[in-house]
Length: 259
Image (cartoon, rainbow, N blue to C red):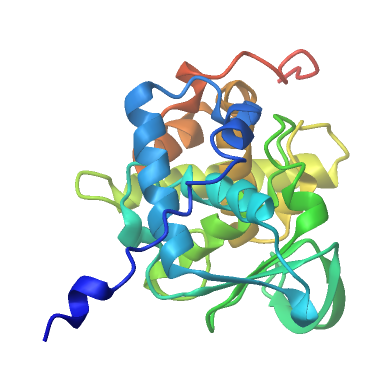
C-alpha cells in the first residue's frame, strides 16, 4: 500500500554536468532574460521527458547531444506551450545527412518521387529525423538551423499536412497571413529564379511549406536580415511565435543585403 513512497523521483534531465554551460555557449540563445531562460528550461524538461530520442540504427545519443538538440527545439515554443509539439513522440538522430526515398510536391504542384539526401525530416506519421552534424552547428547565427526548420514543419502540421499555413492564434488574421506570405513567396521565387541574392536559403523556394520553415530559421537566427527583406513576414512570425528575436540578438547578416 505504501509502494508509492519507494518510487524513485524522476531524474531531472537538466541535472547534467553539461548544462547550463552548453546553453550559454549557444549564440542562438543570447539575450534571453532570466525569466525566458527559466521558461526554456521548463520546456526542455518536458521535451526530454516526453520525446524518445534515439540514434539511427541503434547508435548512442549522448547527454550533451540531447541537450543541444532540445534547446534548439524548445526555443520556438518558448511562449507557445508544451502542447505545441503534441502528436509526435520520437526524434531520431543520424550522424550526418541521410538518404530518404519519398514523394514531395514542388511549387508548381508537381509531385516527385525518388531518393534524396537530407539533413532533417519531419514525418507526418510521427517521428522527426535530424542530422547531428548539422544540428551541432545549428546554434550559430548563420541562418541555417535544421532543428528549428523541422520543428517549424511540426507546428505547420498541427492542422494537417505542412503547407505553410499553421493554425494561428486568436487575434491573428488568416486573411493577412495568406496575403503577406503569398506575396513574399512569389517575390522570393522570382529572385531565386533570376539569380538575385536574397541572403536567405534558396531552398525556401521549393514550396510554401519549406518557405515557412526556412523563414522560421531566419527569424530565430538572423532576425534583422529577415526584417530588412520581408518586414511584413517578420511581423507575422513575431505574432505567431510570440517573441521577437530582433530585440535580443545582435545585428548580423545585413551588410550583404541590398534590397
